[in-house]
Length: 320
Image (cartoon, rainbow, N blue to C red; front, side, top):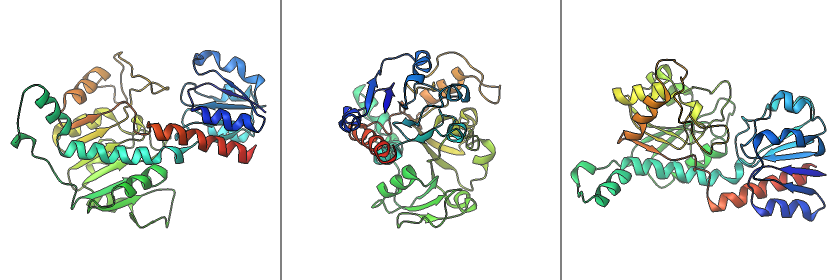
């Protein structure tokens, strides 16, 4: 089997595949537009987020046995069409779930205790204690939407903080694992103090977190998003931050990210409600003291780099 790898992966992936005789061509620096013309020569494709595999590209490469993404989300692949023509789609959320869970906990602790703000103040010669008085997690109710690899890892990481953890997953039932209580969405709205998003990006979840959704919460809440940026409508988030309905936000992802997640656009671009543009909303988030921003690094640890590649290699070896 001949496999094309077009993004950076850990060497262990190539080593495991080549050990059993697979031929791997590793082109991590290849430009996205140069990938499609090469595909007819390969039986398998391993990606991260560089290329968007549309129906058109897939239809011209039916010889592919699989597309494997070294990561969790599959939104850059037309999975339904791929599988309809016999191309199996593989991902590796098991590889970075611990990293995402730990980052989500770290972000809310940072936000609650003004760590970024206080750190910068001290570096600038400002020593303020009372203005940086924090909050404790203890006694809070954490609401999790999406209880797969990432949501369950986050719940596990919260053990020991004396919090109540409730979760809702539209596509899973009877999944309670000792770390969460499975509830209906109405209970998430009723009881949540801190909301953490752990769903994939699909047509259903795009802009799921919007003004109408946020208004359903009985309490003013904190929001954590380590999933995908476009699950949250940024314009509505900014509006709710200004009103105080959202007390603070910890965002590892933003809807302005490019497909590759490596950068965000600096162009003014109209967002979904066509009233506010990128510049206005992003500037607000950058300047808000009650917002923590990181550049899509929740799953990006040294350990996950190895585990993501190991998981993909093992899945390929089991199936092909």
